Every structure is written in structure tokens, then in C-alpha cells.
Image (cartoon, rainbow over all chains, first blue to last red; front, side, top):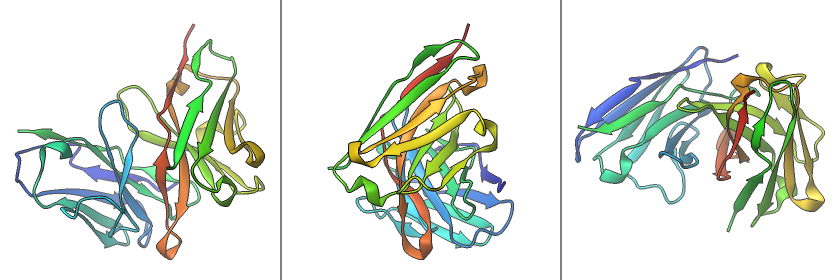
Length: 107
Length: 122
């Protein structure tokens, strides 16, 4: 199975900060990488697909980059509604896997 | 509007069975693969299984192979997860999700249900 490792596991930041979350795959996955946001008690929401494509309706302050094994999710200027947990997910293999999540908290 | 509504969760004893259902609306159900994803209390997301549009292909995570069965009824716009030989570690919120095949053939989960709690405990 392809393992996905996110870093950091948690992060404290302030409104207006630029934040970057990293996801590393245990083998190359080309651009078969998606990012999700989850708020407590809610279903996840797709933010970025195919490593760098913004899902419809998602604010442009979110962006994704990377290919191969190393990927990043960047939030250019944190807003109050962005404090949540973020997950990466690979679909290179037919057995999909998620990263362990990055919890983004208010400093 | 796309909607996915799960039902069938609850409390079950170890070794017992439960069947989850997910009814879809707002899109042509028969055109999409569908998945189940679970989340243990306080933990991350784990993909469980998915099923091809016509039900001819199914994939499972190793930890549920031989115990869980995914199926679908396109006439009823529904996908199911039959869970047998349940273990305490299967306790989780179970989400159904639509598999979207996008650019470069990358599969993402673009719509999710509200989630349904399954508790395995004696």
C-alpha cells in the first residue's frame, strides 16, 4: 500500500498568516493527490484535486503544488473559517489512502 | 443539488453484522464509482471500499477484506456496505462518497454524505 505522511501533525497560526502543509508519498504517485478540509462534526470537503487544481467554489487563497512524492497545500492568508483539519489523499493506487491529517489551530 | 444520505448505523456487539445504506440524488448515480470512507473517534480518514458503476469491480482495504461487502442498486440510486464479523476497531463514523474521475484520471471524493456512526461494543 502507498503510505501518505503529512507534516506537521498540528500547527498554530494567526489570521492573515501564510501557511504550508506538506504531504509525502511512500512512492511516486505522479499528480494523483487531493487535499480535503474537515471541520469538527462535519464531512470532509474537497479543496484541491490532481495536486494543483482548485475545486469549484473554493477560495483562491488555497493552492496546491507538487508531483512525484512531495506535495504542498498553501493557504496564502488565513481566515477564521480556515481553522480545521486538512488531509491529503492519493488515488494513484486503486487502494486509496489518506495522510494522518494536519490540525490547524488559532494562535 | 447532489445529496448523499446514509442510514443503518448503530450499536452492535463484536462479531455481529450491520448494513449501511447510502441513497444518492441530484446526479446520474449509475455514471459514478462510489466509495465508503470511515473515521474512528478522534482519528483520521480511512478509505474502506469502492464499487464500479455497474458493480462489476470492487476494491477493499486489507483490514475489511472478507468481512465487508460493498454493493449497489442503480435502480434505487443506492450503495450499501454489508459489515460482518464486526470488531471493536471497526467503530467509526462511516461516510459514503462519490468518486469523481477528473483531469489526468485522478479520482477524488467530490461529494460526501453526512456520516453514520457505527459502534461495536459489548
